[in-house]
Amino acid sequence: MKLFTDLITLLLLLWDRVVVAGYGGEDQPRREFFYVGGEYANLTLGNTTAQFMINQIYVEKLTPPIVTQEHPIVFIHGSGQTATNFLETPDGRPGWASFFLSHGYVVYLSDQPARGRSPWHPSIGTMITLSTSDIEKAFTATSSHGLWPQSRLHTQWPGTGTVGDPIFDALYASQVQLQADELLSEAQNAKAYTALLDKIGPAYIITHSQSGPYGWRVGDLRSHLVKSIVALEPGGPPFIGRLPYIGPRRTWGITYHEITYEPSAGPNATHLETVTIPAKDEDRIECIMQVEPAKKLRNLAQVPVLVITGEASYHAPYDYCTVEYLRQAGVEVEYADLGQEGIHGNGHMLFMEKNNLVIAERVLRWLGSVHR
Ligand SMILES: *[C@@H]1O[C@H](CO)[C@@H](O)[C@H](O)[C@H]1NC(C)=O
Ligand SMILES: *[C@@H]1O[C@H](CO)[C@@H](O)[C@H](O)[C@H]1NC(C)=O
Ligand SMILES: *[C@@H]1O[C@H](CO)[C@@H](O)[C@H](O)[C@H]1NC(C)=O
Image 1 (tube, helix red, strand yellow):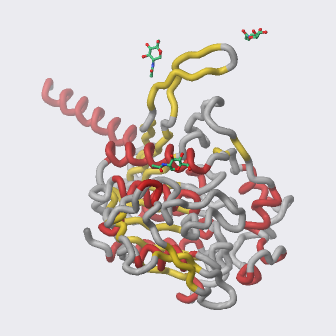
Image 2: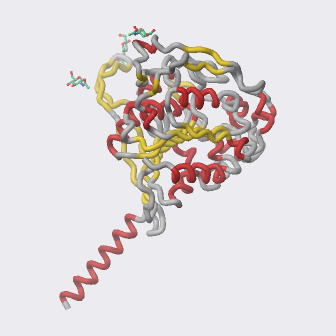
Image 3: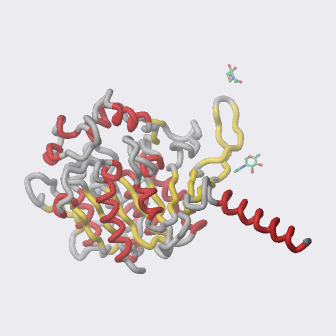
């Protein structure tokens, strides 16, 4: 009898574990969260100086019921966005997180420092916010503004992409403030995501837009932990701040802050010699490259890279410059210029557009082909 009740107790305990671990059931992903990368600092706010924690990021870990992939995927969102970008689309379809979970990947979703659930201390930098007009022109209703040649090809945004359309309104409601100082932002992100990799170990990184350079920095600082980088329309082009909104010059080519070149690029990259090469065609811009023999991105060159560009995006005129710059500097890059591959009509938010899972399949195939 004792044995029997013990057995029942054990079964109940195990059942409890399955239900608790399962986050709503054993066939559902398990959800955990933590903060990483924070440090204490004495800061002055108003009349008082006191100790606060800064730079920590909110990280959500989603584990599928059966993990079949060797390494997890770390998503880093772009400007004005948060990790919700990858959860679901603004019209309620499954996002990339669900897609990669269903293919057996552990997925880490996070909010950049001073963004979303990652706290901002009001004494550090200044916050800005993208307006409805910024979002319509750059992301959702690009064809009616025609700010770059390829914008007329944009067909994949669900809905009209303008204020009052429920899908636009859902996207716009998710837009948050961001650090105005891009140099500060890059420094904070490189530090926070390096701390994340130190905590979780080897991972694949997927960056978008503003976070593209953050991925290059983490790849440089932790090339042994970054197994590959998928850069969705990475911030660029080399040296020229950020188009179509001109930002500070990218001193180190693909980044604002130091990245390792061999031979050395010198203090403030003053030994990087550049040359401007003509545009590939009339719909694209000229590129700034290194003078040959080019210095190599010694650490980043150990990391396989996939760059993806939407056919109609504001990145269409210049992402090829980033690809060619990386290749010249010794980085192994596969370039998925989606229009050239028969995937038509995507804008900058391609992972939430109508064909988002077609593009996710493209990423899945590449991740499966890279062994390192
Ligand atoms: C902040 O100041 C207090 C009091 O001087 C000190 O104990 C603490 O170590 C300081 N914290 C940091 C992060 O410097
Ligand atoms: C801060 O200092 C100013 C000037 O000394 C004073 O007028 C104000 O009351 C102080 N505020 C607080 C919250 O102590
Ligand atoms: C790098 O540039 C910054 C800003 O122009 C300057 O303050 C700093 O002294 C420079 N550092 C070196 C090592 O040249």
